[in-house]
Image (tube, rainbow, N blue to C red; front, side):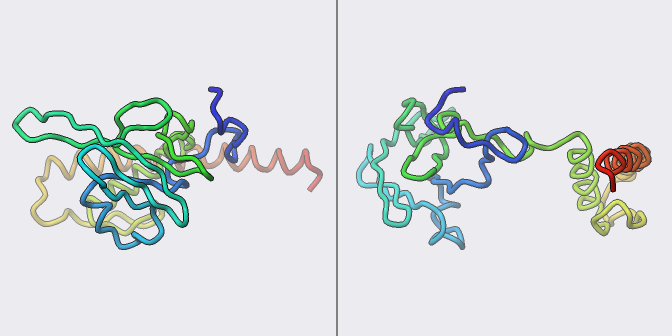
Length: 184
């Protein structure tokens, strides 16, 4: 994808992640965020225009609305590059644009299969109120959780752990072979 930012690449030759860029949102949650001094602020000027302030920089941004199914309307920020309605715009240097125009990816798009399995196993452990980390022993069933749900989550967790630990010997062998090739 040829963008203004195509020269910037991440660690694995991919695109930078959304989580690493300052984000401007037109939502109640963003307006009252604890770290509002570190994130871009969207200040509505009138019905169709807002100013995005970040540090000493300011960008004018159009605000568009679309009707909701059960009444009311939804407000959107309009990307200055592609003119598309977006929930969030991102700051990169002197530029303010949407995720697609900047060529940003989500952090999980840079994860390997092993990282995804580990993240899912930890998410299941959190649902079950167990200690995080697959090396810890399994805990009891949480109060109020249906036995069927508990059994389904434990089965999924155990299959993820078996897949992660089953491949551990393969990863150790690969690391040892790399070290031998490097002469260490």
